[in-house]
Length: 583
Image 1 (tube, rainbow, N blue to C red):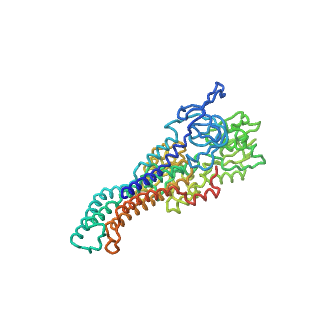
Image 2: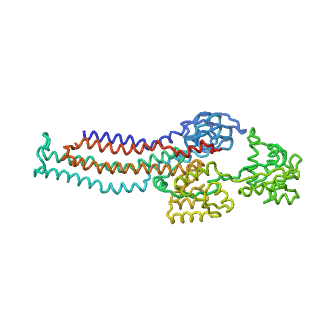
Image 3: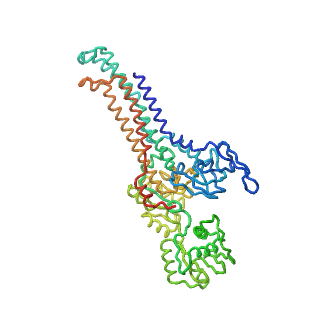
């Protein structure tokens, strides 16, 4: 019975441990088995389709993805429009619109339209393969807290053997020299056998396995759950450091903000339809390479949604004035777009209304662009790098979690203070070079903070390495960011909170596992040694001790598996309800 219970316990333990690495199995299953390979003629027309094993896909192959099918490889769309469900890779719940030129990730599901894609990364280079490798190495990596169990285990086994022998010897000598009444000895055995049973029970009930399983099982489940939420945690070290984080340093561009200029408001001063206004503006700006010009053209496309690449009216006599703006003749109208000095140079009067709008725009750290049509200021555009949806709420939630937020940016002080004011960050460091960002992180660490650095992984890499936890945000498919400890697959700031919260939950589970594993041994060993026998006549036969030992290991693994039910903090769910997530 003793051996049977130990084997049963081991079987249940292996079964439960298998479930901890389910995340990897699920990721592996995402890759489709087959793909439809296309052959095109010189004119780009499809001449044949062939179903092949998806493992045979080569770089630059053209693949057809039908509605409901999985995307067979990483690549970009060369034809078609559809929505793709990327939740299995990035955790993004809503399907993402895809059209010509957009990138797709292998293993995601095409929803409604037919897509033709060109494969760019295949086999071990694909995002899916990299994620699987990342999760595998994370699950194998030891968390520093594991050293605690390793230290105990080093002394545990010899200590238990000594305790077991001492228990047998104590009861044997007590029986030999009549240290207890003869009535205590059961009829079926003598004093030697009674002492032997106590000794064996101590040996069997002591369980170093539960201690050994406490950390790795929780780390495995925690990293697996993180991967399913779009938060890739690179091992136990990152998980352990993240739960202690009490200061988060944010980069500005691309982290707190979207990272590219966008038209945020349009104020018309003359009676003109917005569509016609932007038709003229886009025609004048389309020949300019300036990022602000591209933002205006991109915004103008919203008024021509029916066309993928709209043709704008022809601009004659186009002239780009560096640092000021552009001039052009569009539909026989003279269009001048740029800053205040460009208008004054061309003797175009600026009305009081336009002056006020311009001052208000610049006060909000936005770039104001005046648009003159036929020598009259017709409208004012405000362009800025807008905040990411929910940024203010994320900073507020971090404050409620007793986590200090700091912003470090290479941008000027005016823009930095404006953005910090909008999100509610009090401490700002502006005009900082990459090396200075890393120095600031070290200063905070010296002041006693456990620092997480959140950046886009390019100019922030020195600070990401210097921080206790480096979080690369908006990595998308480029997940091999060496500098970061945690990669946030989506560009959502709320995943910073998910990462910190998940690590705190995982570590509270590890603590619970240790309390249970140590508590079980501290209580179990004295009972097995016969501490209750003199007063109550209760003794633990070896087979029951074996069952208890098996139960302790299984219960630790099951306790870790409960992490699978992890839900993001309720405050984050309210972000969706509040309609803050704007695409």
